[in-house]
Length: 428
Image (tube, rainbow, N blue to C red; front, side, top):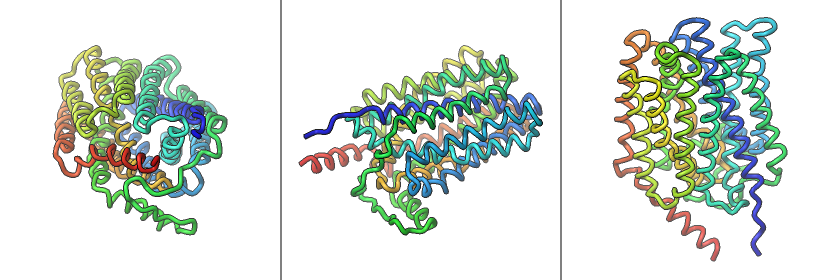
């Protein structure tokens, strides 16, 4: 007898992800503009971006093992509660005893340290929540991507409006509130009984962890899974470079462009929202038809069109309208990327190791982001904004040609067949 379908846990996980991501988007818009207003220095905006991204890398690299052990549901709740407290201290201290720049950087660092493990914990529960709801994994990951993109779509313009009317730091109260709501949604909507399914891994990778395994051994085991799977290695290496370029664009180049050319906070919020709108539509389209598309071709063309061309257009210094159009089209192309990467990761990794392997992948993919942020801040001052857009855009295009070559990317299209064959054998 088939068990009844329950969509509540999947909806709760999606809701928590949207809330937490939306709050982070507010921070992405508010903090660079605050630092630019206080210091007038693109280099300091680069320092802020560096401090924002380093804890993401550290949390992904070292937090996944703890998440696997503590439990995905509990880790998600703790991450959001701590993040809400640390980011909430920024406007509180500013309004009371004062907040020096170094204090802001410390609190931003602390907020980011648990954010990646929390997001990884929620993602790790998606396969079981999707199975409980009777939803195919690719479709659930499409919804996951669409939810995150919708947070960008709404959070960007909202952040721009809040910063323009109230100021940058009061806008961070919204981020603190979204962290708290995200934790509450998981507490209420995700049952304690929902946990990663036991059993054999989906792609032949061995589940090497045991209850008495040491921390460092467990961490090495997660890294070994990434190293043994050529496709995961290729994804990490390519996304490592594109993420460095993306953080340079979003945390430095776009705030400087918005401030110096387009008029400030509201323009930046609209650009972030346009990216979110395009990506939201792209993720929804993927959730509807993704299972019928050739996965590698979708991934390759999406990545090629998502970053480089829009940067090259910005180098021409177009008006706000054209900036919004180009950014929305780039977002549309990017909409399928995270769902595809997330599906590949969940298909390749043993259930009991999802958080640590996801953390290792995230840490690798984000490892160069701090360098990209710092480099962008320095280069803007040395060679100018237009030259930075042109250089970064050209590099982006060259890097994203990689998936068009067969090895090891061809295995991306074989995985659905392997998964479906495995499901058929299980059903038999």
